[in-house]
Image (cartoon, rainbow, N blue to C red; front, side, top):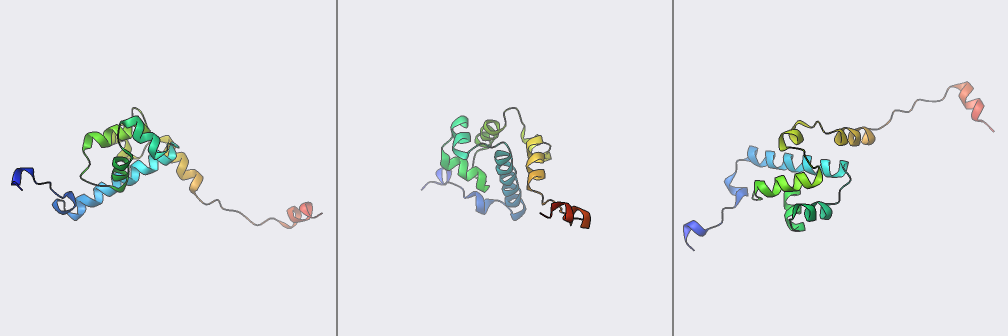
Length: 118
């Protein structure tokens, strides 16, 4: 095979730190998709991508074209930029985090226990 036509394995071409960044972007996209309650298959169709490409984006595959990633992001949250995603300022993400936080529950006082006693 000619060198110019050989496909570069992005996993091997990137440093560990760069691969970690790719995975972090993917995790933020998944979190945004879940927060916005958009199914992966629905986002893929809206973005004009195959489901396999959507899965690759969500796994942090560094070989996915940036244009495909940006279209997928726009399909999940129209108008949001990659910089906004990375800043984590989306209200849907904040709401998801609040919903997933464990709630502290205090013990009932003696008078509250008596009020509930049948």
